[in-house]
Length: 560
Image (cartoon, rainbow, N blue to C red; front, side, top):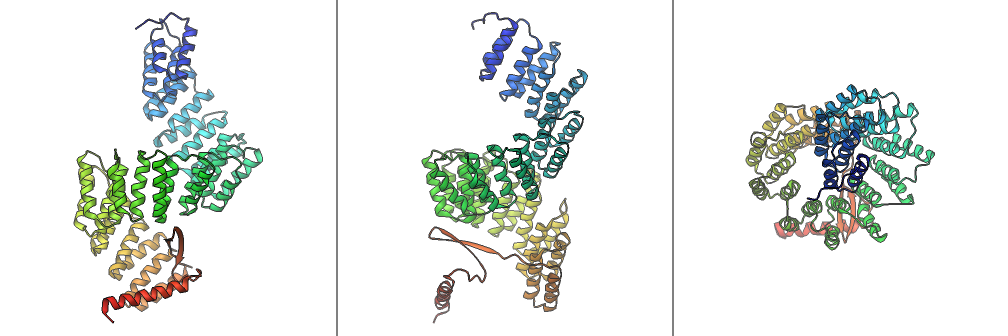
């Protein structure tokens, strides 16, 4: 290899920075290695280069070599290596850098303190250490506030994020676009529509509403707060939209279970906006929820036409969509054609078999997956246990439940216990289901007791049903659905006194059962309806046709 010409140290350091900025790390390292002597600036340039190019282990290695060479780190060195610590998520590395900063008297410099907050908050167990550093900052910048609020949002503690936002407002911190964007995300995390509207108003007042990042965050906030009309209105009034804007609105409509998510995709095409894999997976999710098979077929064609046929996430979404829309054969075709299958692929197909009652096929597919050395997780076990439940394969389902932790090292969570309770309940083994609830390593919630109550209704066990219902009402006193199910159990057993008592209690707490709604697709249009619905002008004709069909079935089954 040709030896590089000798450069003055400052020039060589600038060359290292230039190579790192353009992603030529090997060239930067070659210049660095051939330096006859290195000062702290040269070491820092190499550390920063690795850290900014997503090579944290290399950055850490250079930092250790620098310490071994007896070169003292400065504030820029430490802030750069803390970026690497954040990516590696090693608490002990961050703590050791923090100790060096204290020993060197660098703590208190703004960018080092902010980097410490960011590095500590990269992992959930470090959030308290991040808060200690944050509270110790004498003059906090907007970056300091944004970093700690973002950490709370990232780790799912929206309540703490909102409290920190209010504290920031109280201290009169100048709000920049980044601060406003993360504040909007905090309000979305706790679904606080009131707080979100306040931030929206502040954004308009300050004059940052035209900032696209903030506008996208506001659209997302309204949809996550379930104010879909405000989200759609704001979206429609946005003067500028990018792909993230469209994806945000489509995802919001998908959460709402609205067919408008599919219609919005057509608008997106008409405005020559190119979708990405997230767009397609979200739309396919909407098709699955609404059982809109014909539109799902069309999306599949668009996916192939636009060259996304090999995309892993889209293929998984197609497997799931076809299965949930009733086309198990199409689901199998997509699954069998996949060049590579990840855990989500296997889970989607196994769950698809479960939805269609094909328990045997689900078990066979599970065994095939394990033979390839793929480690199952709790979600996959939920899928295979549910498949056994729907197919009446009780012993097989219990075998999987019992093997989870012992063989595969997967500890059952509440959702898996719920599947096992449903498995036992469907088969009428209510006593065993009740015992399983009592033996769980955590307190059962209303969903677990609800699974038992539903099984009691199915098998007419009023005694155990009352116990399950009381447990639910202790957790959710105004749960109208619980009163309705329990009263129906008593009615089926002709226990009219108990039936009247439960109905009276229901009226006393002001309980009112939400009307159940169903959807059906007819000629590529989705219609919603409820029991006894007479709002559709065709309801009379539909009732007459239904009556004719019932008469026809009676003649076919019982004879004229």
